[in-house]
Length: 245
Image (cartoon, rainbow, N blue to C red; front, side, top):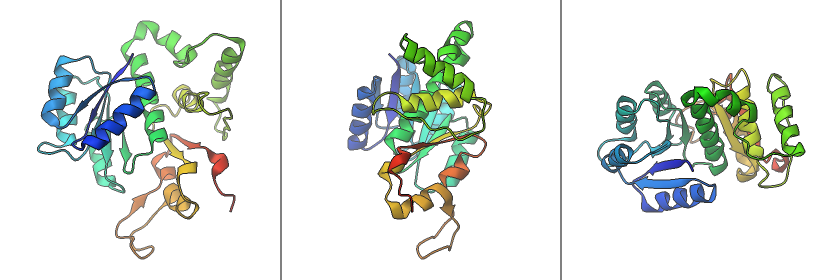
């Protein structure tokens, strides 16, 4: 079982992240600050760190920099303030696997975590890389699963838009992550957005962002998900719930 370290100074946030990640099948450790996180990383076998940018004392950026000195291969995802593109650029320059913006979309977070861990598994285990890539981390052996894996291999080389259908809980996020990992876009971001969780009047801004001064209250430029996914993959989860007009 993979272990994720969630770092946040707010107890309620740690609890929500811990409960959600455990429900998704991960072991979870939590830390309130830089010092607690550094101690647990030094003492425990952590597979991925999920940290808020803002921590009391030394920041999430300081923690990221320490991790990259001590354990360069340990992947780190950083949560930044909403619309704070400067912070996002800074953490990526310092070696973060990727970043999330507040408010955090749990589906986007999970797709990003699974993609990051799958990518790290291939890097860390060259002797099993071929096997891992062959099945994209998908567990199970049946004609239906084999057909899904075969389809992933076929469509991953395409630049066409891909529609993934299936009941809730059948692994649509995992398939989206696998397609991204198998494609020529694998070294660029996988950006997920839960269309069902965003009000109709906000979906355009979420997708395309806005420039400073575009409307009242637009005090800074906000990058949309489409631009964030440039050269990578944009995963529109629950697109069937998006209003047509």
